[in-house]
Image 1 (tube, rainbow, N blue to C red):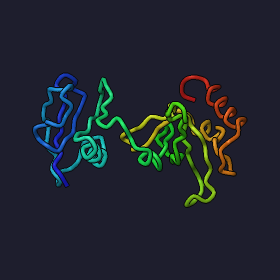
Image 2: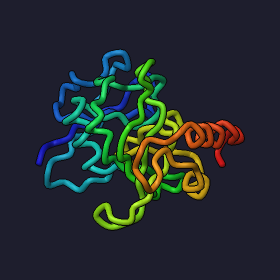
Image 3: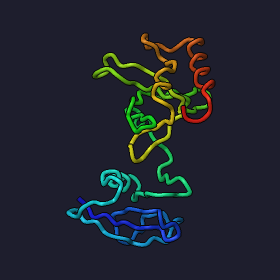
Image 4: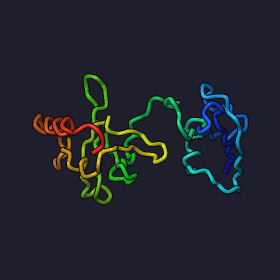
Length: 190
């Protein structure tokens, strides 16, 4: 286990930064200056209101982990590989997982991810069901380590699926039904 260094941003006192080096050199310089609040050794009690595992994952991935209000997105790796998205949990409003991303559905012409195929239910892939969610309805949640939607689970599960039980690409009618379902949703959380 490692020693964690907890900093706060002097210009934004509610913003905290974790790193594993006491100089704080890996913390984002545009949010500096940083002031060291404490060092938390491997044997010391963890009192931070964020999981030690989440902080460790952030430090491994980015060299730091930020917690609190930040005025910009902190993305050190702006590209993610599709195999890292596949198998990722999907959570509803109440932080309850209701599915797992099976595959990304990409527009051939633009190259944009349009939808994700989410599976739920079943055991070891047998008896599982598919639902299709527009990619823009999901946002990655670092704390949960998965994608979150503000849609009610019942509303998502009622959506038309891109793939039916026959697991073949859908015809024009099913694609239109799916687009209509998502375009007819009222704005805001459901």
